[in-house]
Length: 444
Image 1: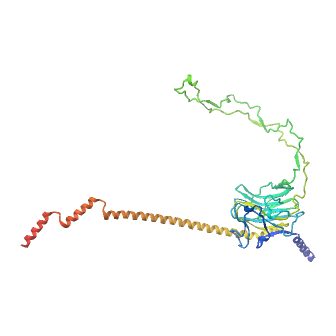
Image 2: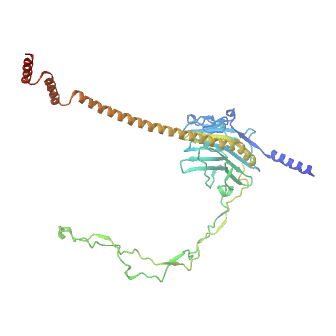
Image 3: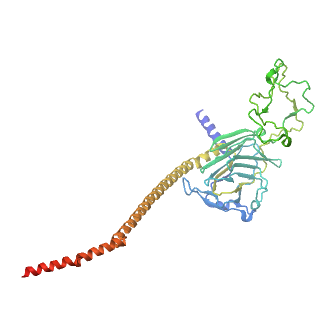
């Protein structure tokens, strides 16, 4: 019995594994250019792709393809290795990773799936596609996830608003399209939207329409409130909105014969109460809002295969970017949501932590560098101020020295010269004569 149970479990696992189909798994390893075809339709307006891990990564060898030139179109696609396929009676999962490390301001980040009729080198924006899925950013108002299905030649946009990520880190976008005409959108493996295809896109004509024969009865009373018939306007209510200014006086130079009769200017009436309206009461005859009756729409045609496409031939990117730098990686197309989740864990979880750690380190280093530069700038300003003060002090000293050595007052200099001359040669002839006479007497 134990053996039978174990064998059944193993058989079930084998069957599950066998039921999983991978139509494409692309990690952009070496040789990726042999698997992808670049469109040349836009000529010189086509941007170049760069094979890189970007500025922030967990492993520098884990590379994706990056848009390399600003204001350029980017078109690139890869055929499914095992040929075209249909998703009839099975689930379709589209998953890819994108990183807008340039802080994108306007540009697409979505993928498209085309039928096998696509000429890859001539692929462009008007090339018919089956599904378009992924983020689109343009300014602060447009930050959405597109989910567009082509149905009978018309591209149908989702009615709901799904907001995309707009930071500089990698994010994984997943679309699950089920054969029961339901869908699910995930971002980083977390569900952000789901529902029925018929409800959230305009695939079909409405099931019900307003009965064209029905009309609201003429006596239908849909007024919730009516005037109170017992309410009367007060007798003193009729105050005019404007009155003559009581403080105005006729100018002294006013001439009635030439200027006409003088009238005081009008001012707002402070007692004006506005137009009188009676109070409102509940309408006792209110019948509610009239609802237009509906009938079955004769043009409605149900379609149990809204989800189905008979021909998927390739997947790729057809985008325009004003500011380049987006990196695309880890593209997966499969029929297994479980396999997609495993691929997410295998490729993204470690990468995400590494990116954030590297970005944090980069930000810390930049902050330290800015702080050091600011301190150096302040230090240089202090040195400049000190040098300026020293220069000013030297200039003052030079002026003082010049004054001491050369003199600034010619009269003072003249006086000094006269004093010096008097000290050395004498200024009083009589005094000199007396000294000579005293010496002669001493000698005798």
